[in-house]
Amino acid sequence: MSPAPRCIECGTERVSVEIEWATPHYQINTYECPACKSMLRLVEPRPADPTYH
Ligand SMILES: [Zn+2]
Image (tube, rainbow, N blue to C red; front, side):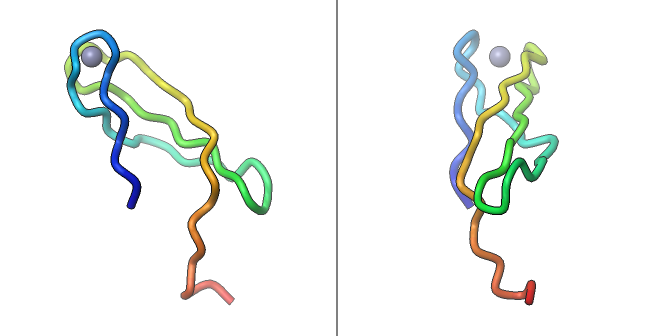
C-alpha cells in the first residue's frame, strides 16, 4: 500500500475513497481529506495483484 498524500490545506492524511482503472497499467485513485473534504485525484501505477489470474 502506498501512503496516502497529505491534504495541502490542513495537513491531514487523505483517505482513498475510490479507485478507477484507467488503463491496464494505471489507475485513478481518488482521495478525500476527512477534515475539509477536499478531493484529490491521482494517476498511479496499478499494483500487481497476485490473486488475479
Ligand atoms: Zn484538509
